[in-house]
Image 1 (tube, one colour):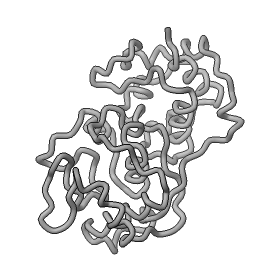
Image 2 (tube, rainbow, N blue to C red):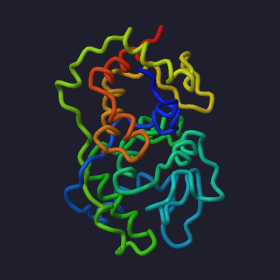
Image 3 (cartoon, rainbow, N blue to C red):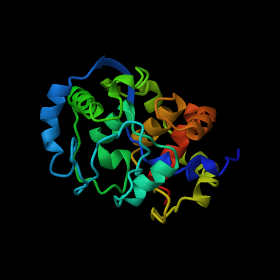
Image 4 (cartoon, one colour):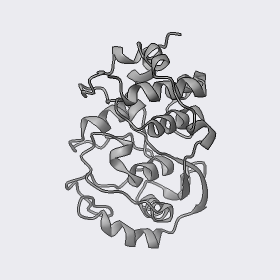
Length: 235
């Protein structure tokens, strides 16, 4: 089996450990304003907002990751934006849940909001500062999300690292097996479960990226588990 090089060459391949799935109910913007106090050290929003340690967040809905002119972003977010990542209710929620897991290499030193309700409320608050917030379609709602999950039986599959090594040849034409980040995100030494959850998020179209959705959709559960086992400890 040979993979197209684009499989893991996509800059977004390594930026997701967990993601946000289907939406359920609208967040509370007023409550989100209170939670946003945790963000004010680095980010401004509203009239006269300027870039600080982090970029201002006016008009963030629909913006390409690292797409605000005049702000110096990390290489991690630039690669994600160039690979098609945009900020919507689901991606914003996934990012603020655990920024460093979502985008390894980001300079955003924030532990994250673990409570889905807090995240939904903050996203609702930010939506108010986007262009024509009332016109943002409900397909991209401000809502409480639920963490992407994978069937425990799939997570329990014991991957064959030797098979994973066989499958990995195309991956390592782009990714450094030593774990270096030379312009391409590292995919080695991940916990098996994180790797499996990431690929299944694309496979089940819970994570936006058409190419990764297509490629992950071709992989069997055993193949994903094998890759996870190999890249967890390629030595």
